[in-house]
Length: 299
Length: 207
Image (cartoon, rainbow over all chains, first blue to last red):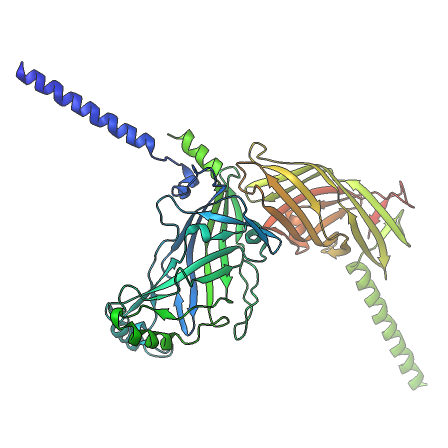
């Protein structure tokens, strides 16, 4: 009798556990097909108009005399709402942060030459290149540069017509560059929330001050997926080489007053005309309504 | 006497070269003709596309009423022209439940046109094309975006049916292309070439 009661209790617990699992699964988004890209889009937010998922797969960021190739993918995701302002004859939409809080993913990129900025000549033998990389780009002397949002996601602006039309600013983004190395401490940044680097990225042609010269981006090759509900822009290229950057600050912890000038000397001039951002990748866009509908239809 | 013969020979040679040059020009640059005679002055072609569609990968747009007005003329024996009006009405997509066409308009008219011969076939090449399409639909990925179709289009002229046909083969032959969203798009269409001014109901040919 006692054994029988215990078995019944176990069975009840098992049913309850299964029911809880089923409930939690139904509460999760079950986007299908290409819609899974928008898993972190705030599509249930009634202010969200379109979901965006953009992966920068290559390109480079030139900050003064330092050129950092983008080797690890950087994702910009979230949504944008109804237009808030109109300038350059285009409507600009405010961004809404990704639901997981990672609107701009943090992907540390290796700074060639590391802390000392020693880069092998292209003509040098492979062994010399490998040795220089080993000594100056290791965990102690190597430097990583991570792009981070300097302000809230709501400060990002998007113009979908400029993006598709290859004119004017397509994506305006306040960013800061986090320089990471055991000697630089945790707070070595170029740019801050009060003094951000403002990228005005275009798929058209830039008009930078000298010594930079105009460079041209590309809207990419458009393709419509999921019965014209998702726009995919392959080989999208966003560029800006007219931005300025403040001096590096907070490097070296309590001895930043000593280290900051060294880092700034390494970076060289970072005023407008000396910096470049080239972001190449793939961009997906769909209406928040249709992403939500896909979710609701697949509980 | 010998000197005279040499001069005569040179003159014949020059004439032969000139004739050959003219012959080459005539085959490379066809002219507009009505009832077999070269058009003098200008003429207006008015028409409606028999069938026309424009495809961005994943979405095809068709207009039930695709009208056009082209002014044609011959310049130094070569057929030229200008597309002056392209009213487009009743346009739909192949995903009507997702994307509708809220507006479509030809821009930067007139578009210059010229006749050209490629491998014995005659073509009309239209340059400076710009069509702005605005799609709508709460689920449409292009909703609210103005899609600009730009570029050059080459269509083959068929004298027997008095039509100009545009498709991927004619675009390839004339090395022309139309782009939208930085992507090469497909445009197909059959356009009757019928005169509506001085040469009404006269057979229009290109040769």
